[in-house]
Length: 139
Ligand code: FES
Image 1 (cartoon, helix red, strand yellow):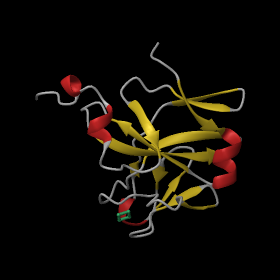
Image 2 (cartoon, rainbow, N blue to C red):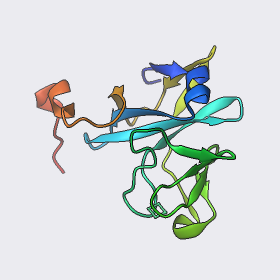
Image 3 (cartoon, helix red, strand yellow):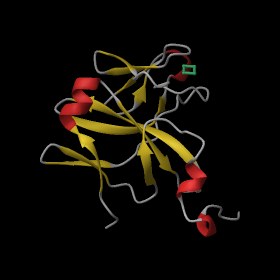
């Protein structure tokens, strides 16, 4: 088992509608992810539309309606529980998931492929955070 990293609470995600955080992906690059309400729990998705490289949450919270995340660029809607889109430009695609788990109302990042960096959007300072010797992996 990988490490469990505390992110926030289920209550916060439900109150705010979505919750944005920055990760380091499996290639060592910073990326953004969102938590969204799914029924009584939460799900985690990469914060990027599958159609074009459009953030779903541009920093003000993702637009949500009826359990769906709405892409701000062309309006495709993704199911917050499955990540699947059946409409518009992004039809027949699924958002890449970020594995999370809930324990006693607290949301933990459990995805072994990514590393939590900080809450909120990518700031540009991400490479200053990690140990320099591991910040770039050769191809
Ligand atoms: S960029 Fe999201 S639907 Fe086009």
